[in-house]
Image (tube, rainbow, N blue to C red; front, side, top):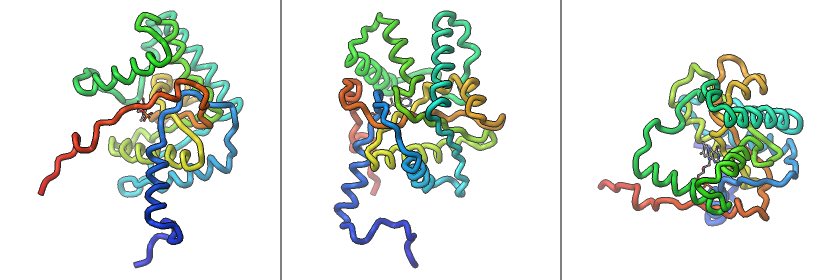
Length: 246
Ligand SMILES: Cc1cc2nc3c(=O)[nH]c(=O)nc-3n(C[C@H](O)[C@H](O)[C@H](O)COP(=O)(O)O)c2cc1C
């Protein structure tokens, strides 16, 4: 049986292959400050082509990607930031903005709520944002809607006819993008924050009525001088979430 021609190059040792793949995975982090340095279209195309090798149930490949740069990016940022400010000024407007699917549970339980809190307060603590500092919280949250200044914004949609399994497929596709970006010296931040503003985003990108927004993503060169990018998140070790059965 012949291997897929896209298999790892034989000239590279198994150790080097493992190191390269592991480094791309483990050096991925959610960057929340980017430089304005543009990303060439050929690089974005290569990342998306590589990511398209993600597996999907019966090879359905349910992903659809919108790449926003330049004016399309800036106009979306302006529209969603305005909506975000308007909701803050008049919370009753929040009812207009609904996510297409529940990314988070209605009712949080331990240990997830504890990890969520640790994550949120860890980030705000690093940025010196106190629990009562609502203005700075709003500002920091709004950085999502500026793609954290990344020059490239990605929006991901899924055909509404598809089942929940397609979201599993989608996760693999998204991870492939993030890892392929790392392999090219780029960083990303996956963003569910956009989901509530789907009714602004979908018409903006020209999505059809059958599409639902899965999430957004910021992509570009991480700003190494910004303290926010020193935020490194912990993980539960595999020994704690793995049950070995003989
Ligand atoms: C689908 C998805 C959506 C996310 N949405 C946001 C978001 O809207 N804003 C944000 O700052 N981080 C977002 N994150 C990043 C998570 O907070 C982050 O992955 C987690 O804290 C682990 O940190 P790390 O990515 O740096 O390893 C999202 C992550 C995923 C996988």
